[in-house]
Image (tube, rainbow, N blue to C red; front, side, top):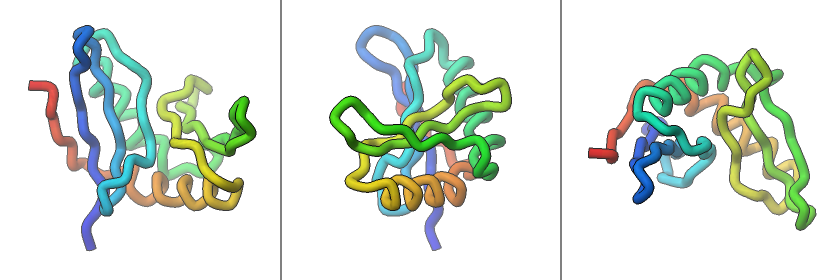
Amino acid sequence: MANGHYELTKSSNGQYHFNLKASNGEIILSSEMYASKASAENGIASVQSNSPHEGQYEVKVSSNNKPYFVLKAKNHQVIGTSQMYSSESAAKSGIQSVVKNGPTTDIRDLSV
């Protein structure tokens, strides 16, 4: 069974960003923008270590009433944000996907 992977990219403004993708290629978690590649790599490491712990997730509701979730580090900083979901149960399924795929060590550096 295929596992998820991280894609590390560099934006046109020179900042770095990563997405965690499920085995089907769907983005299940996105990072903030980082000023350096090393900071983005530290963000990936933080997702890898925090994603297996369900207590690190928080389901929220957006301004347009769509549920989504954030993954927080032990210091309560948000380290990843999900897409918007149609229901809270769909968001909770998304969390389960990040719990499963987050620990992967498959990091694809597309920033070069």
